[in-house]
Length: 400
Image (cartoon, rainbow, N blue to C red; front, side, top):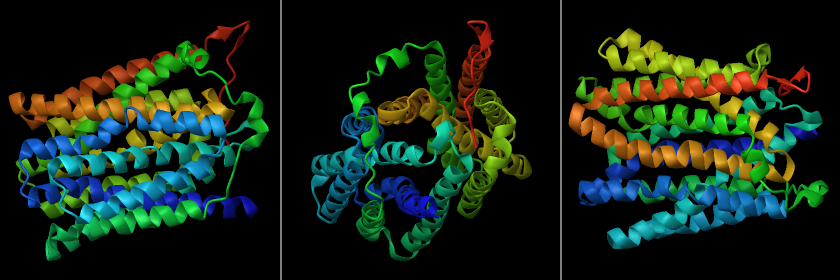
């Protein structure tokens, strides 16, 4: 029961953070457009978040590994992000607004890696990663996203975009409250590992292929994150139906997080990694070729349970395995930088160039190719885990 109580604030943080993302990311461009900014300015300002993911998560993760004070650093980050959000009520001009967003994103982009690292410490007792407890926490993030993407859309439709700063302050206020309710955990038992170097881990071949797989897997997802709504709109889908299709993917994601402890132990994590990327190939193929057929597109969206929810849990468990103890913060940060920082910048820029030259459908053919590369890299990870080492196979990652 005490353990459950300790995890409640992490569930609250997940709900608050993804509730913030659920309205902020989809509607930030519309707010900037409502302010009369040009498309070029809007594209630059919306790219600030992906840019901060290139440096902020690792910097915060390294600091949390060195100090062990993950929760205290989360409180500092949430406090600065909340204060930055309050500045959005004033008209700073494009450059000033860019600086405010830079300050805010530098602190919010590190929240999930540090939270995942702190929570992994609680759900990895006895050397096993507890997928049941992790899934029950993470599903609250999906619920938060689902609520605000609909509620904020209805609000902005009725009252306009002028309340966007208020929504930002409200959701980041919820994040700030949740981190102050967290148990003040410090991994003091690992003080001897304070200066544990990360390079030896990164030199391991399975780790290198794992990061290669996650990079290309999430890169293929960028087509969904950035261009899916535009693609559906170009095919004549109504905005209501576009919202329904997004909701389907989040709904199956919630179901998976709730039930994943039943399924994940049935195969090694590296086998799941192969399956996730293989299913991503199928999903991108269906989306690219049959997006004009509604039932096929609905089927493709249900695959989000495997291509995102399963893949995310598998990645968190593998990171916890390869980067234990005081390496955990940097491991989670590297995952964010490689899988979401670089892919966010590269995917958005390349997707824009590809769609402008060959149309929006071509983005999803490119995503299919990327997921194919991810599958090949995941297969390499699986083979390396099952390669004989000193006369015996590598020990698989334990799950509970």
